[in-house]
Amino acid sequence: MAIAALLLVSLQPAAFAQSFTGQIVGSVDDQTGAVLPGVSITITNVNTNATREILTNETGNYTVTALPAGNYRVEAQFPGFATQIRTGVVLQVNQTARLDFEMAVGDIATTIDVIGTAPLVETDTASLGQVIDRDKTDDLPLNGRSFLGLNFLAPGVSPLSQGENTASRGGNAHINDGRLWGNNFILDGVDNNDLANGEIRLLPSIDALAEFKVQTSTFAAEFGRATGGVVNLTTKSGTNQFHGTLFAFHRNDNLDARNFFAPTKPEFKRNDFGGTIGGPIVEDHTFSILGRTVVLFNEKSGKCGPIIPLSQ
Image (cartoon, rainbow, N blue to C red; front, side, top):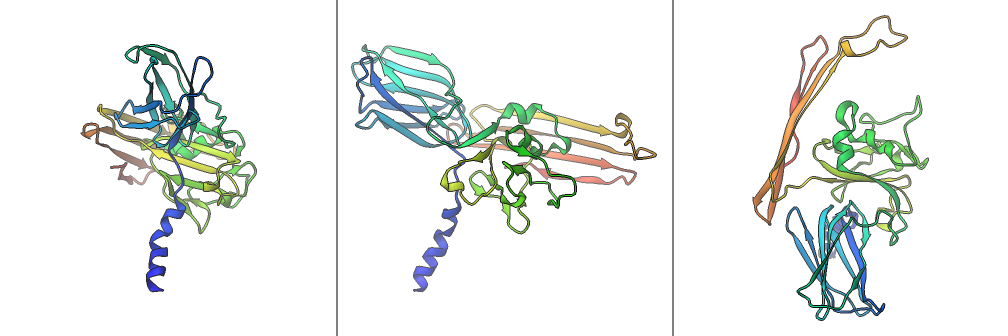
């Protein structure tokens, strides 16, 4: 009995895992419309050179799951037919991308290259949501540099009303008019909720995020604990090339307007600067991203914020 209880406890965390990766699905047929079973499908992550291979089944369909968000190259090979290659396939967090192939008769050494991204409309899932990609997290201004301000780019997300009781970190918003504590925050597939007050538990730096998805309705059963919406975050990964960023943000009361009801402007100065660097530890195998954020805050007190590690 004790052994059975121990096994149940050890298996418990797996029940809470929720998908932040994507998948690529599709079908393969020839120019007459006949399905082609046994076609070799090779999917390669362009940035890390990670490769997955699979064969189409007896109905000519294939499914490759657990793919991290990123840029992919998809290749289809079958004897007696020209090899087809799709490049520039951008897979987003928790996306189901469909890539169908129509194989042309020819030498397998002959290649047909097609450049284009996966369709933006997901026809293989009923989930509705909005992906906030890296361009938005990098370029849009954020007060306090918190990604939570970008949630409102998704349709159906509204801020708190004046006087509403909210958590100290401001992690709550109404998604499709759901309750504040009904939202589900996920970080790299791990539950990231403070169940005591319904707010987000770990607030990652905006520089650590690759992208995130705000799912508003009809999401899969794996996210079923949420009565509001799902905020699904994925962090950055290193690649085979070294990349880095430097940033500096400044706020000063001399650049602010006076509040209409305030007789004077309070002194306020904030400097937020830092940087990141990412790259290979072992090429094609192990990658990492490191960063530091330094916050200097001075409001007539001379206090200095802590040096906060970004990720490692």
